[in-house]
Length: 358
Image 1 (cartoon, rainbow, N blue to C red):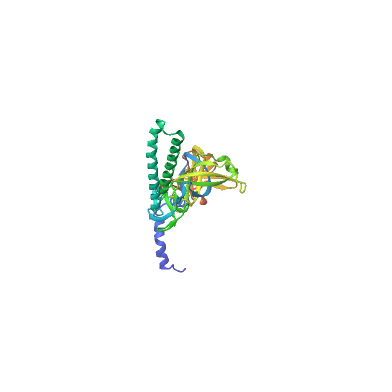
Image 2 (cartoon, helix red, strand yellow):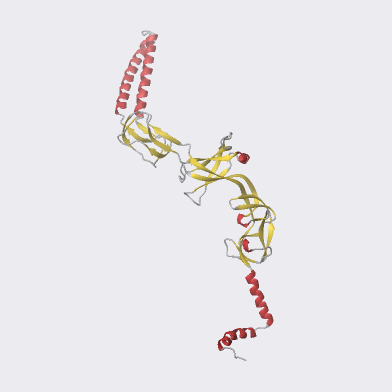
């Protein structure tokens, strides 16, 4: 019989010594514990909780505003001053630019002089008319002349005031189309003012969804340029007619924009909450398993899981309403379901904590 190599003897000696140091029962217990720990599958769980959940409808729309006004030159003249630029906020009535109004000013002063002369003459004739020294027709003619001169003066004064181009509404200067020294014509667009504090979003909704919508429904809005942020909105009007071209109706949402983060023309995704269920039993949507025309979740029971069939209601914003099959505060698996079977042993971790169960 050949002798064993020295290296094999040295390699196996520690294992033999280790086995000789414990009994058969202790070795069997150690093996079972190792096998049990290896069989436990790590998963992440969440509690089923009570809360409010909304049925929602999602659509896309372009943001617009009703507060958008072109500023037109009401008199002709050369641009002498530009007082604002694009992007500046202005108040209603604020002067944006001034035209050369010297000719208009002189016409106003001439009309004022004629008016004052007529007023003096009229006052003299009042006393004469009271004493019967002036005919009624002549006196009334003087009154008509005075009224006509007053109207002429007011018109000349108004034209002179129009040489200062003013903002018709409060908002942001979204466009300037005139230049310093340019001669503008009557009716020419000089500026554009846009009120961005209150915006609108028009949704085209299929007519089959019409019963779900009503004025006053709350909504939220997202835009790509400002990720991870939602802006509150509200349905303020619904068109009573259907667009025959595409079979949809128009719902208009109001969006408050006092911070100025949004701008007309942006493309937005809108979620409208049209139905509220209060104190509903809610679980994360990622817990749901849909297969073989049934809906189920893995529920943690001690150190194992049960595959539990449930009935669901509203699905919204990553949450599910559970109508039957689950109780409040039961733990459902949200991560790790693919490795599970009914009755699998698990090492469960509550999401967002370091506390383990099972």
